[in-house]
Amino acid sequence: MTRHVEEVDGPARRADQPPRTPGRTGARPPATRWWRRPWVVPLVVLNAAFLLFVLPPYLGLDPSRSRVVLNEDFPAHYAVVVAHIFFGTIALVTVCLQVWPWLRQRYPAVHRTSGRLYVIAGAVPSALLGLALMPFAAVPVGLLGSALAAVGWIVTSLVGLHMARRRRFTEHRRWMAYSIAFALQTLWGRIFVLTSALTGVTVNPIVLGEAAGWLSWLVNLAVAHWWVRRTARPPRPVFG
Image 1: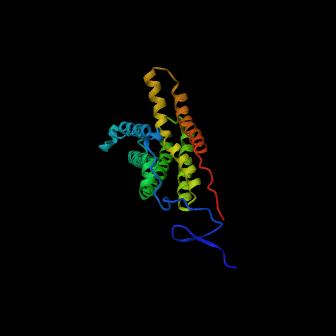
Image 2: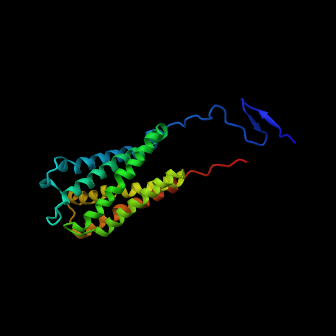
Image 3: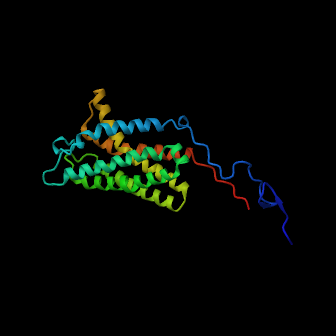
């Protein structure tokens, strides 16, 4: 028996299929306005302020200006520090591109390219170099928390990239949110120390260092998990 079909705006469809939405087939989704994502601008400003604070002493490649106490028994210490900062800078710049809704919706190819750069040329090498530097830290405070954060950054970034390549975008969104939480932990660590200095509140350096090493990424992860759950998209209906 031949199925009954209807002609609707050109191509035929089965009678039991839902009607198409006129005028929207293949249309580009409207870009999300910046004011509907109020955290984008503060994130860019915070990242820019952090980089302006961290980068200048290392631009001239002068070891005497290093803010990190260099270990004389590790000749490549300064070079590894500079490489860690270089890859970390790529990660923080591409993070801003990754969370920009307008760019993701209007220029998905740029979003994909910046995402690969974030993982391959930013997060993974920066975290690996950070782990390599930890045994040579002048003050071994907060290292366990920082080491776990580095491992978490690597794992979440690679899993997020893998999910994107598999086109499992819901999982990709979740894992990249966690990856960005780890990426931003270094900012909050500096903020903890700077706030203590500006307020004049005397805090034991060991306590402050441990708090920076742990709270900076645990709080970020909690916020990222809340955001993922809060903004989860409802499943799309499947029509037979």
